[in-house]
Image 1: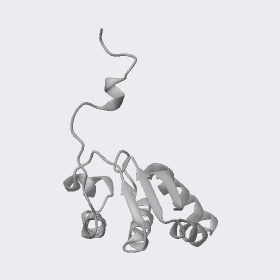
Image 2 (image 1 turned 90 degrees about the vertical axis):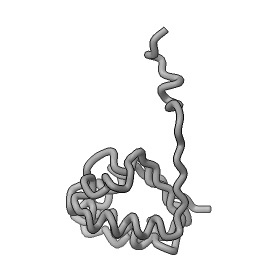
Image 3 (image 1 turned 120 degrees about the vertical axis):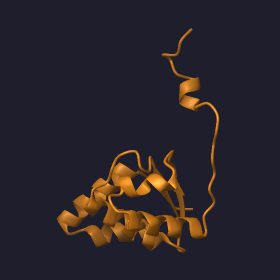
Image 4 (image 1 turned 45 degrees about the horizontal axis):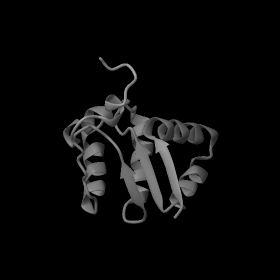
Length: 120
């Protein structure tokens, strides 16, 4: 299985750079060739309007054509504030939820459990 992994911030930065350089279609084609796209840290950093539009294109292009794994600790109702546009966020959620599976992990954070700086 061909897999690509990006943090959302990294992917948005790469998409914006490719758009400025005139190589956006090449990057999108490269992403489209993978069978699984993993997007980590979804919603950790706000995305500007252009970045949101580019990210939406990746999600829309992936809809019903490749598997996506998205990691986030942000509930759906907060996505509009991160992606600057409630309608675009709703369209992303719609595409992701249609065939998607939501896994919610509860409990203590693995990183916090194994942190070197925890109280003794």
